[in-house]
Structures are given as structure tokens and as C-alpha cells.
Length: 545
Image (cartoon, rainbow, N blue to C red; front, side, top):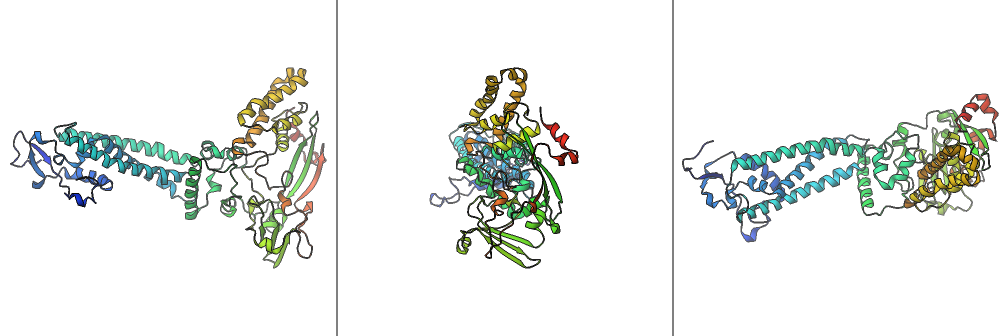
């Protein structure tokens, strides 16, 4: 390093950065005298590091140690790094920028996106960034004032100051690498998992419970709830921030309306049909429905249906509603789309057009109602988040072998305790199992002594049914979310196929059972068709005796 001749022993070589000097009436650039704005300080910190190594004749001066209480004798980077607030501000700015760079690739990759990730990218990181910018000038001001009053270091030691600065940058860089790779990236990745959407977010606990009991339980939420493309990306960010605000303000609706009901559902053509498509011929499927009576022996009967799923040109259920050339529109009288007073059927293949309406509906009243084009989810409205009713849930548990069918009155008693109006889930956990156990202790003491383990397991299985379907704090009760598939527990198909939707000349939408399914056995104790197919014994073996 070159030392000018004017530098004598006992003098200290310093760098003077000439900040603009402005009058008291012109302080529209700096918030305080000689102090840069927050936006310029981050850039100034970097510039000062390079400038400190360049000693022009103008920047060199000899200053006696006794005069070191003047801030103009210190380099800007020294003043900035002298106070912990300005260091913290610089660290926050760097952390926000680096974390954003780690998260950015996740946000621009297309369809697989998460609305909650927008909370990090568009809310958390900007807050950190601007908080850091605010702290930098505060720390600069406090450091400058401390120097003027003689607090802290009285002599400017360039070597010690540079060591402090190097340690700061080293630790900040290490922390940012750890935060960016182990925290930010993993946090955003975790936001794309069902465990975050349903497990972390309390308001989604009903949907998460139903999700884990569904055929789609290995998919990520974003596969069905986020649309592809730029529009889907923007909508997901808006949705994530809206949900965050509602959660923080505790203003979210109870129960949470379904996506179909709130008109926030991504069209099935952009989600469901990436794996399933209505034009594919599905043929026929066999459906076995087990029903248990509420008698002492829990008598089982079985209904066997051959479902005409069809598709494409073959007809069947899918072909009749979404086949080539078929276009159906309908009007709804309620947000949940359970009341459908008007339907329009068009077939572009043969030019057929039919309009069906209920008897008390007028053309003017139908015009005022919202109309929708029929899509998969109008029938398959709960393909993943499906909730059961007590009777159906007990039948399924007995058929799966979760509950022993040989326990007297277990079906009847199970339905009774499930329908009790518990105020909280904690109350249900405390009372429901005890009600089952107490019933057998009081009425079947010998049986309880011999089969206490089966009875205890049955009580826990019934409690699990309750916990999957009822959430009192969120006002999710039995039947809160109707399932439109079928017509056994909810109107479903009968919203349209009820015989009351007719054309102007009196033709009604068909209600013929064989249009959609062929009954092979109806409420039979031992259907012959199952024996013929060789599956009767296998079905019976699943039951727990």
C-alpha cells in the first residue's frame, strides 16, 4: 500500500468518504444529516468496501488520534458495521434475497404449485427484506451518534474493523446457505404435502381426515386444487394469502364451503381428466353393497349391482352425460347445487335439443338462476373428501372386519352413540368408547369377560368413525357435505332423475333403474350371483367374527 509523504509517525491514515453536505432546508435526500436513505445503504455498504482499498490523494489525510470522535473520519462501512442493528438489517436483507432465489425455481415450474407457498414468497420474505432495510439506517444513526459522543471505540483500527466485517459476512453467508437449503427450500416443499395443507392448517382437518381415507390419498393436494398455467399460478397465490388472512383474523367460514359451492373449483378438464377422461370406455363394474340390520345378530343382507359405466360411443352413465356431442347445462337454486330446477340437453351429433324443468319453475325464474356446464364433479363431487353417515359408516366397518359382527347389537348401539350430539371431540373421546363398553358390561357380562378385547377394539373403531366425520368446532356434522354419487344417502342422481323434470310436451328425464345399473340381487342374505362368481366366500372371510 502506498503511503503519502505527508503521513508521519504518530498519525493515523484514514479514508474520508465525501458525503454530500446539504442545508437544513434541503433534507429531502437524507433522513438525517450526512446519512443515506435505507435504499442506498445496502448498495453503499458494498461500494465502501471497494472504495476503502483505493487511496486517492483526496481521500488521504492525517488525523490525530484525539480527533477520532468525528464520524467524518470513519469509513461508511465502519459506521454501518459498528452497531448490531445495522448488521441485523443487512443480514435480513441478504437472507430475504437469497431465500427468494432458493424458492423461485419452485414457483415457476408450472402446474405443481401450492397456494401456501405464496405466503413465503409474497408475504414473509418481503417483510424480512423491508424490515432489514429499515434497521440499516437506524443502526447507522445510532452508530454515528455513539461515535460523536465518544462511546465505544475511540481509535479507528482498520484491521480490527475489517476482521469484524469479514466475520460478519462469513457467518451471514453460512447462515443463509443453511436457511436457504435446509429451511426455506424444505419449508416450501413441505407446503406442497397433504400433511401441511390438512395437518398444519387446523381449518382443513375435516378434509384431511377424509383425504386419508380416500382412493386419492397418495396424491398431493395441489394436483387437484391448483390449475396449470399463469392464471392458475396467480389464483393460487391469491388463494394462499386470502386463507392466511382468514386464519390469522379467525374469519374463515364454518363449515368451510366446498370448492364447488364457493365456485373456486378448478375445472375437472384441467385436473381430474389428466388421469381420467370421460371418452374412455369403462365397460361395466360389479358393486356389492353390504347392509347390516339393527338386530341382535347384526343380520347381513347384500345388494349386487352391475354398473353400466360405459363411456364414449358405448353409452352408459358416462356416455349419456359426457359422450361425443353431448352438452348439458343446468340451473341451480342453491350454492351447494342440490336443487336443480332447469336442465338443457344438447346433442351436436344429431341436433337434438331438449329443455327440462320442474313443474313450479317458469322460464323467467330459470333465467335469473346461475347456470353451469355439466362436468365430472357435478356427480363425483366428493371423489376424495367423502364423508359418511352413521348407518353407512357402521355397515362399511363391519364389512371390512374392523368390528366383530358377532357382538350382539353392535350395529344398533354403534349408530346410537355416533348420533349423540357431543359438544367437542374431546367429549366424544371420553364418552363414546365408555358407552359401548358399558353396554356390554351391563347387559352381556359373561360375553364382556370373554371378549373384552374385541369390545374395546369395536369401541375404538366406532370412535375413529366419529373422528373422521364430525368436527363440532368447525360445524362439520353428519351430512354437512352431501355426496352426489348415487342416490342412497343423498338425493344425488335424483336431483335430475326424479320424474318431475319434464319438457314442454310432458316427456320426463328417465328414471329407469336399468339405465345406469342392472340389479343382480336386492337385499338378499346369500346372493346366488356371488356364489356363481366365486367371490361369496371371500367377501364373508373379510368379516371379523
